[in-house]
Image (tube, rainbow, N blue to C red; front, side, top):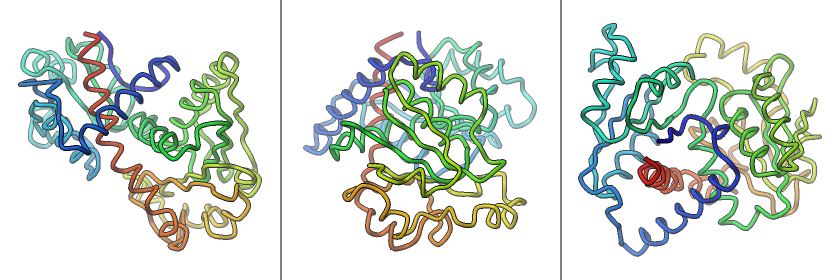
Length: 306
């Protein structure tokens, strides 16, 4: 049995297999055809962090696969009243066929997985957001940007940056990251990325300025400067990230037909200008939609590998 907690646990071949399945599922869905891969199966969805895209895409996704999703807010179940996580895992494992958790610490996912007898999927943690990167890469492939890919991430060295490091180092493309001083990606993740890159041929480079990172890149991406739980740091972060907005001037340094991706929600005038966002809105909302399709593919893939 496999869990889906981070791309670190998956090979290049497995990642591409999931993407291929997602493309197949999406093509059928666009024709109004929904194969019941998970007929009558139940997905338990635990949300310790609220969400728009994660909740809707998982709930719609399991429905389109022929199953049912149960929304479980931590405020509504005993987990929010002090029940040990390992007990929740053992109880839910006897009642549902698969679990998705959107939470804070990655260690909570790892503990749940240790005691779960059904596949566990990460809907996000403070360390990684693997589902988002599958959607990003699917979108890049759909737009024909995967060959000779040079991707640049500009902004906070957060869970999205960490997940870009895992994706690049597994697939084998060039990734450039630029963050303000003190906001670099997790050092443990960087170490793992460089280790995996030796096998895949990936090139991982950290740049001092966003201009150096985006120059000649084919895909530019960013994320909010103030993630959920960091609201008290908002003023300081907005000051520290001055100069890191992806605007027309910065995009002009990239390849002529470069993509811009954003996992949403996007705060125009901060990490991205309104002009850049609107100019690349089709790509961004393709990316948002692809969360639905890659998540269906992950659920089907995990169900097949039980």
